[in-house]
Image (cartoon, rainbow, N blue to C red):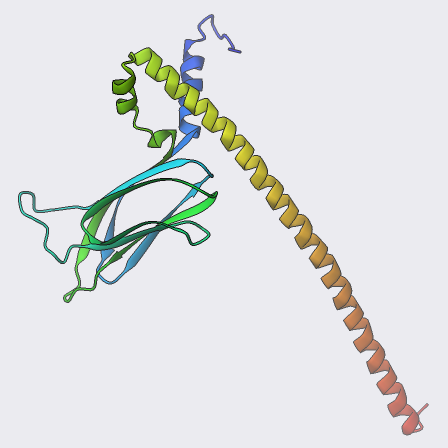
Length: 219
């Protein structure tokens, strides 16, 4: 359903399409510095069965010359359950692609090898998930489809991704509510136990004082 303002629904339609594409995928493209002997990790919340691709490389500030052999990093991509999805040992560039088997936070950690004197590496990292991870140029070439059909396919995948994301968020909300109820129940029983301990200590103190005063024949 479109809401017409001034008899022209096109701006709202374009805005809706942009919002659909924006919320249906995730893209992290960043450049960071990493000192030798140090580690830097980047996390991404990915739902199960989502496609994710990543590319990384060490930036060469001296164009036309090869990177020194000391400019290498070790890269590991793991899930929140500790499963290993990618491992690159002392590389200068690399990429990974996988379908997430379980939902949760996925971690990409970069470790620069030790070097004396210390050096600082610049790393470019591009991480895409969901609809953004799909290679639409290859889809268009293989299917021999025009621009309009390609955009419609993108929109269809975006809607499906939003639908899955809504169910995923609903499941996460139910999990958080269950955790909240369990925490409230534990706090209730802990409060009762604390009250019982306080009353017991107060009763013992009264009994001790009464016994003490009776022995001293003060009461």
